[in-house]
Length: 176
Image (cartoon, rainbow, N blue to C red; front, side, top):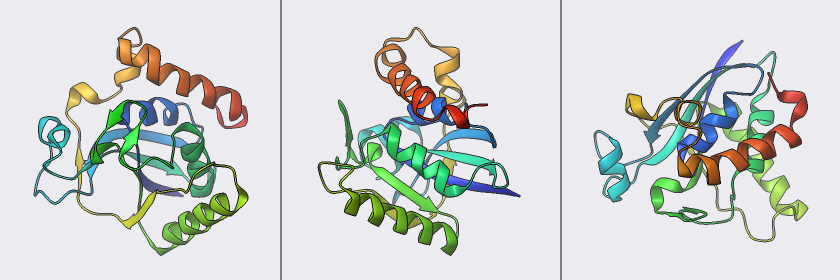
């Protein structure tokens, strides 16, 4: 059964590059969600004026991969304990957020965050926001499939590539 998920965990290039390699994920699109402005584009979002987060919208087959499994990957490839920051990327556009598409996703996300918080997997408190899906805006075309098109670009080499490598080792069973 085809479903959607919308996740933000720092720069959307990182999430996109990982989820493109997950079996059962049919489409990954970088975009923006969660802001107060009526529209979103890269310059406005990066300025911090819109409060949008950089996100990825996933289309996935829940008979192949569950929403919970997608979230397990999500929590492994970014730091959910830093507020409005991932590494050197600073600002609310880089926040950790799960925009749920229905009450089932909200329940699964809340349960997993609580479990991870109680388990001590992370040294600090998880600050991942869990919210109902707000309006979503696709990112500009030049942001789509960015890592695959620009693997030698500096950010891709030093930030995206290590996250992809970590995913490939930790989640071999989920690789396409």
